[in-house]
Image 1 (cartoon, helix red, strand yellow):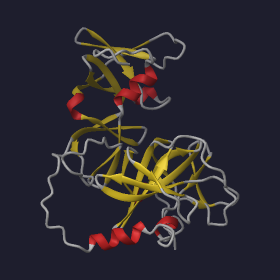
Image 2 (cartoon, one colour; image 1 turned 45 degrees about the horizontal axis):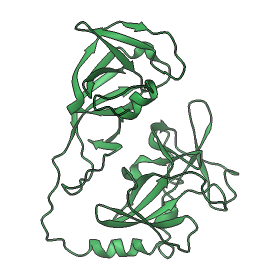
Image 3 (cartoon, one colour; image 1 turned 120 degrees about the horizontal axis):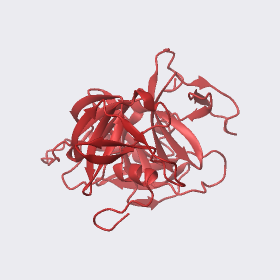
Length: 305
């Protein structure tokens, strides 16, 4: 039975939401090893229509697949990769955009999502809209279509006696907003303040910034991670980004945590989009993207936007 179809519990499960070909999908976080940018991909044709080639990640070649809503080729760029793992087998899922981590009720069988004859399941979001569930087992079970999977298993049987040099684990400040777990690079954090009143700002075209706070005589722009529900976001994380301070609004600070995700070689400079700590997954805040969304005309101290 598939990983999606075998779940009957009523408790919420963490799901990684992503966009592909302008449609929303969700994959259970328990199947996700990490999320990375696609830097090196070799297009190779295969028997499976969803197989688009091989990606090299930390010198490890892994098959790269894509979700297709129909028979047509995806019309959008797919710059991000969700690395899926089952046992020793690893697959990369190329996607258009990572949306974030959400908690859903278990996926329900649903017909008519695609023209495929494969079993189809879907989650329902808070607005009752359908999010198509992706079942990684359909690729992990297709070894004849993705021959690299057999090679991966064979390589894991060979003892690796070479000493691995790993990077020191990064630390993050963990926080929650609307029951979602987030993390921000602790090296950017100066402190956390609470019970500070916010001052609303007039709306400007293209600018999402809605308020500021005053801390130690300085006025700091407030960055929001969600839409609405601001009345419970009473704690502000003060971060320093290129010599300018910003305040990230949050509901609760969980403390400083280390990333317990599998680490790569010391030369690997890829930035994780999801970290793991004590079995819980945290969405890493992309501060540059968050600022760009809130203040499109922001210019860093080095002259870059």
